[in-house]
Each structure stands twice: as C-alpha cells, then as structure tokens.
Length: 114
Length: 110
Image (cartoon, one colour):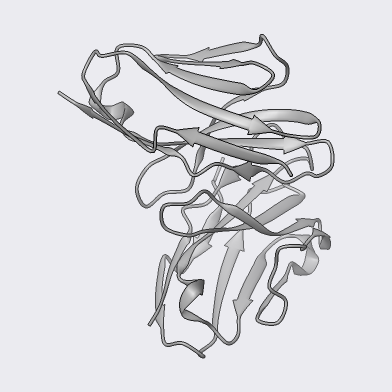
C-alpha cells in the first residue's frame, strides 16, 4: 500500500512569513495526526483528526497554527506568522483506528525559519 | 504527568556487540508502550507495541521487553544497518496520542 505522502520535503522562510504543509494519509485511514519534531527531541503531537473532526488540539499554538482536514482525507497545517522556534520537522501520521497499533508516519517536512 | 525518559542519548557499538536501550516511564494508566526506529530524513517506523508487564516481542535482532516502570530494547549481534535513532513512546488511558522520549541514537561500526 502507498505510504503517507507529505509535501514539500523542505521549506525555508523568513520569520513572520506564512507557510503551509500538506499531507495525504493512507487510503481508508480515518485518524490523522500532525506531530512537531524539534532537532534532538521526540515528536510532539500538535493535532489529531478523526475523519474531518478534531479530537485533540490541546498542544496546538492556536494564535499562529491552524489545521484542517476537509472531506476527511487530505490535511493542511498552516503557520502564520512563523517564529524562529518553529524550525522543526513536521510529521504527518495516520492510522486505521483511533487507538491503532502503531501509526504510519510520512517522511516529514523540514521547516527552517530564518 | 505522563513521561518517557530514554537512555543513553547515544550508543556506539562494534558490529556483533550486543547491548540494550532503556526507556523509563511514568503513566497514570498504560494502554501501550511503543518502539519506533527513525532513520535520518525519514519519519519514525513502527517496530513493536507492548501492553503489559512481562510481555516480550522479537523481530530479527531486536527484542523488546516491558516491566511496570521500564522497557528495554535488546539488540543482539547488531549490524551496521541497525544504525538509527530508536524512539520509545507511551499511550495512556486518558488520550489517543503517543508521548515520545527523545530517543537513543545508535551507531554500529563494522
């Protein structure tokens, strides 16, 4: 089966600019996650969707980050305006069920804010 | 607060030199303890899930074990292709999300 697709692979922007990341999960996977992985750290959940509804966005900095999953398939994560501390890899993952036995991650988007 | 601590941060092994990676955790109610492998420039790749103390799972040269406070990832006779960062994560009964540790960066030299 095809894996989780993410684009772009790399993005460099200046602080205060905006950026958007795209994710296409594995076909049929109802649960989609966005994680942030800062260099040298483990991934941290930003937001979890079940179909097109939000399950958990408690750690999403809502003053600058937003995410949507229209039609319960693809998802977009946006940052506006970006700060230097947003430099990280943004990972998308999907699973068949909410309590699935291990997610499948995409390769991520590496964001550098200068 | 649910928390995961991994040690060591980095580990260098000679090919064939067996060792173990440690994952200590605190959790209100454990629903699952996960191990992932992450290669540079890639997302984490699922290895194992353990659910209860005493459980063990194996895959090739890797064996994961679980106690009430720790999990170990044992690597037997490692090869250079086992070089990667190994991440431990837990899921509690309170949430669906995985809480990750900072990982152990393993390097295996020929």
